[in-house]
Image (cartoon, rainbow, N blue to C red; front, top):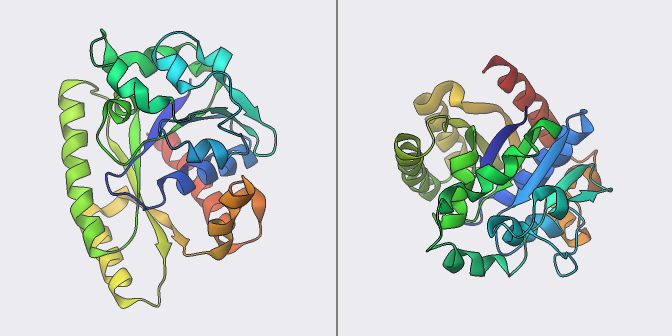
Length: 256
C-alpha cells in the first residue's frame, strides 16, 4: 500500500515543486512505483515532469469534482519514470466549486484510495497557501515533507506550518505528522545558513533529514527543459543529492 506524503510549506519560493519532482524521479530511479499529484493551479510540477499542462484532457480538477477517476486522469511520464496526476489553471476554480459540497476536504483521499495499491509512494505538491486544495492534500497524507531554506524568515513560516499540521491532525487526520525537514538551496559558505541549519538540528533533532540539497545551477535549469534535475543532469551535485534523499526516504519509511 502506498505511503502518501505532502511536500508543503506556507512560504513561497522554497523549492517545494523542485523537491516534489526530483524526489519522485529519484524514487523511480531506485525502483519505487510513484504517483506525483500536482495540487497547485500553476501546474509547475506537471510541466516539470515533461507533461504539457495545456494539453491534458483530464486533471486533478476533474478528480476533485468527481467527474473522473485517477485511473482515467493519470499520465505516465516516460522520461521521468513515474505517473502524473496533472494540474492546470482550471484547478483555481475548484476552490470555489468545492465550498458547498459534502466531504470537500476528503475528495482527494477518496480518489487515491482506489489506486493506492498500485504505488509505493504518492507525492503531493501543495500550493503555498492553506487553501481547500492544501487541506485535501493534508487530509489524505501519512505525513508532510517540509523543504526549507536555512534563512531567518523560513523559521517563522515553519512555525505557522507546524501549527496547521497540529490542527489537521487533531480534527481531520490522526495519521498526519511531520516526516522531516529538508534543507534546500544550501550554501555552506554563508554563515547565516550554517547557523540556521544548526538551530534546526538542535530544535527538531532527527526530524531533520541528513541529506542536504545544495544550491545548484543544473537543478534551476532543468524545469525550462520540462525535466527534473535528476533526469536532466543525473551527475550534477543537485541530482545526486536528491537521489541520496530518495534512498534516505525509503529507509526512513521502513522504520516507521
